[in-house]
Length: 158
Image 1: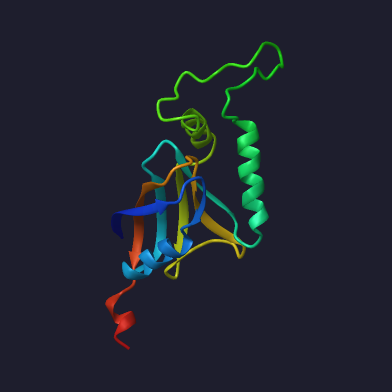
Image 2 (image 1 turned 135 degrees about the vertical axis):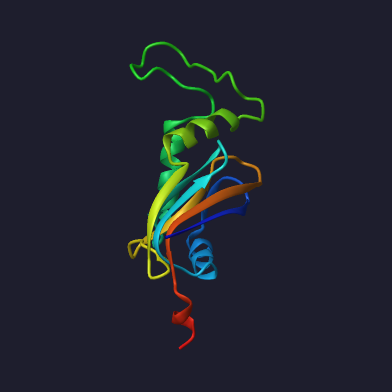
């Protein structure tokens, strides 16, 4: 049983999804990983991780529209519909600041996945996405922590 711990840097272009599946599969290949568990986490409070469909881009557009409707920029109203709009107290970095924190809290900062035969165990139409919730470009840090078995040296010597 082995462990590997790595930090990857992902450049975002602002709000939206970045498919990081191939980056992670490449990392498993480079690190000679055979099978085990991989924990993927983001070191930020305004972006998140999600596993979702990789075939129809409308899925990601709908996800984005839904989370924006659920967490509007202007503040929020009570769920019972009574009272007025409540503005966010935290807006130090702009109008997208607090909504990004809430969106991150409602989604995932950490994913755990199985690795089989050196690849992530995902469904045919699944991909792993870094979901940037801020409007501006950012460099995001993703932590990968693998626990499991590596390929033996003999696998590559035949």
